[in-house]
Length: 237
Image 1 (spheres, rainbow, N blue to C red):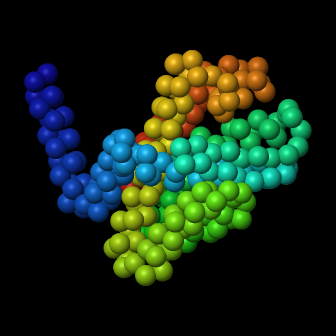
Image 2: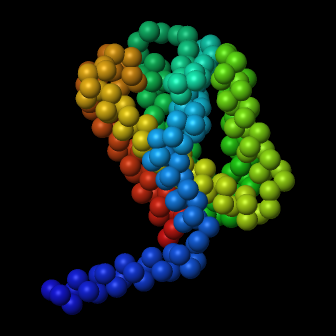
């Protein structure tokens, strides 16, 4: 038993050593993204990026579901609102509310696949295109400034950054989206435990379907956690 434990520890040590040697930039990007998400001061400054992805997910699913997209609003407290027109019940509205929380995580996974395929530059230009599409539908000043600032940073790196900088920045953005998506779901769950029910996506889905809000929150947890696992696998192994 002791030999097995020693062997397992040695395997872990060897794996970590290999990762540090072979992928130092990706690991550094993961550490920086984790700090940005875990440290409350930085999280308050950067969370709007996750909100942009979240509201963009609502907007995209609304359009795909055949609903009319009225606009997106982003607020200084890092909350957001996407307004669409159409039936007040039915699959289209369900998918619209369902599209928010998984969006940052799915974008992070998609970006990680491109980064792992040495397509960091393409990933950044796609991100810029998505931000431009979001900006068209933003209907308040703060939201427009937030999207423009995020887009400007991505554009500078995509247009003038050296390949190594692009690789590191793209990897950090992917890590941030999957870690941030997980923290956003955690905040949703904490709010529900404190009795702050009512207007969250999980609560709206509970009103539109036979399933309780806790089940929808659990689904968000599953998707966000799975996205972290997939990103780790894609970028590190």
